[in-house]
Amino acid sequence: MGNINYRADCELVTARALEELFRAAGLEGRAGDKILRAFKNSPIVRFAVAGDRLIGACRAITDGEYHAFMYDVAVDPKYQGLAIGKELISRVLSELRVWRVMLVADAKVQGFYRQFGFTPYENVMAKCDRQWLFDNPR
Image 1 (tube, rainbow, N blue to C red):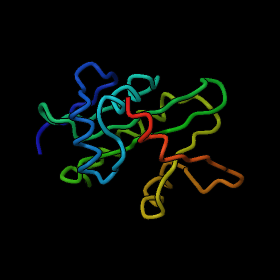
Image 2 (tube, one colour):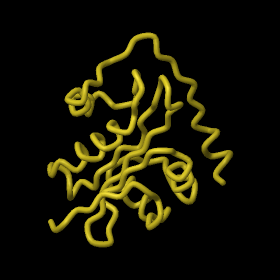
Image 3 (cartoon, one colour):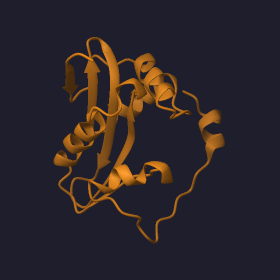
Image 4 (cartoon, rainbow, N blue to C red):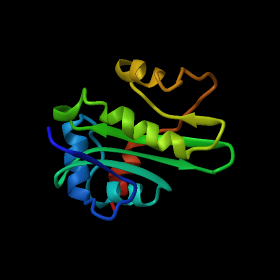
């Protein structure tokens, strides 16, 4: 599948490339310039690139002291099984020097995250307003 390079900045990443990656990975609902801004506004980002094609992405936000949240872990299905997701997550986790890192993961992929020490976490709540996404497309 060729050489895979890892990047730690958004310099060469486009909104279109991110949108295509997330669509291919089945992570719908992330589109347009908004997804690129989300990565640019995150202090820790990692990308996997094969040639000029974006094939993986991951980002995290953190207070740098206690807590962090990992988001948007995606690998193009054509490149899954090559440890790209593991590499992206390992690189992000190595930057997070906090005691608690959280993420949201569907039941079908939770086993993958367990190898990094993630486990179900009690007492977590969320307020989700999907309509807000449509009302605020920016």
